[in-house]
Image (cartoon, rainbow, N blue to C red; front, top):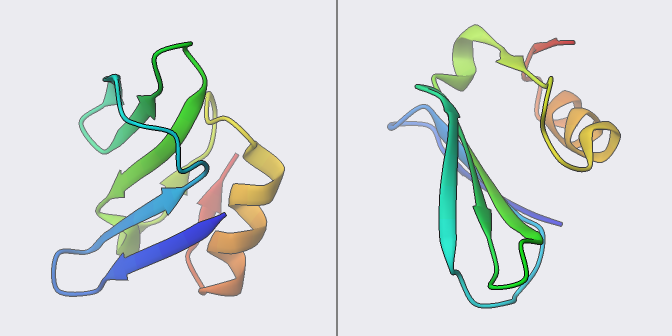
Length: 77
């Protein structure tokens, strides 16, 4: 997993796979999951990260929580 953090935008993108993008699904206004053609998650976009992130319904939740914790982002499980 690769993480891109844009402090100015208060956003994080976590790249899970290099597979081509097919479609995305918004979980809410601050969380989106991108998928490949086979329905496998390839990325997670998280907005307003300075206020903390709810990790319910995220793929690879434990790994994402660890990555966020390493960056000092508060996690709400």
